[in-house]
Image (cartoon, rainbow, N blue to C red):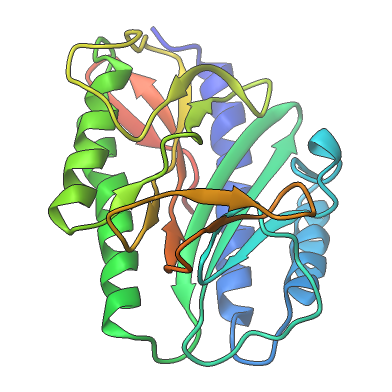
Length: 246
């Protein structure tokens, strides 16, 4: 049986994070900057008696990861305004009474290209296809296989050097949740665990990336657009529960 107090704590953390994410989505428009969105995120997290999970984590300087177009993950919010046709990925986490929640989403800024629209749809589909198979007893490789298959069918690729993860009393815990894999391979998931599944996808057949001089920003070396979706998930005996939703 899953511990009810643990489940309640994770639900509360996830709900708060989902609320903040919805507020951020409402503010995303041409002209707004990453720094402005970061300030909104920090203010809204603190209003909910929570602590930004990313700020200061490993030295990261902001509350959100703000990744535009060919930046896949870990972009640092700055003063450059968003432009029509951009896509922006926001990764965000918080801690509420010691319970951690983590999520990410990618949204368009105005009208975007067909390629970018397809990329967002495929990446989100990969996340939900993976979530749909979650239950106690499956292997982490089962999740990775579903994510990779969904993405490859679209002609895109998943990052292999960055993964999802366990989560709970810490932001990052075991096991790693790879976005590629083979059914029946990897650790088995147990009832009462919590994991963050997060496909990171580039609209190209090659996901080669580099890290910028700031030591954080990860971008496609081919300058291809990227998308990132993530939810925190509870592992139940016969299924799952998404923590990061209202």
